[in-house]
Length: 239
Image (cartoon, rainbow, N blue to C red; front, side):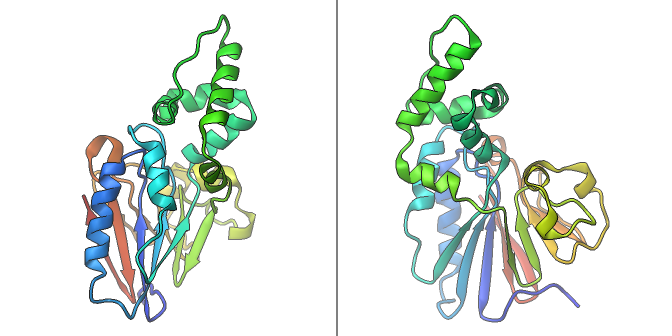
């Protein structure tokens, strides 16, 4: 039997945005136009995480995600590894080098945080941490801290990176949910749900027997992708 979502519902899952507010605005327009004439359906927007870093407008993306959606839509915001990096850095400067070397500087710039002066790496990281802590709006802080790890609807499991095959959902580690690649991507295991994920960039959406990948590298490709699920159908919208 084909995987399904509950009758009366339509799900839009959005891949990794990475600071591209321009593409999110375009994809929103496509989604809201697609939803015209479907007022009787309950519509869920599931965001798969990695809202920040690399692209130029991380702060604007978070503002957009916090804005009210049209009537009939509800939002589910999941955590990506880049979103977790920001939270980790605010708690411990040890997370700084990994984050900053993977796009974090773009996020800092979007919040008006420049590159500090300092004689040592630790002093520069501490100054950056303090500046970001001051610059981050409280609503944004609550947003990052409140992100979920997964969402299940119908026969689909939505998560940022994937899951470890053979491990029950309630025993998955945050590290795997945010970072896993090969062990998940190349598994043909039945995960109990079709796993819808981002994190691993492909030129086109990947529609596999046990997973659907929708990270199309928006920050560099200009292509932000959404998967649309209704009853037993799956289709895609992309900028």
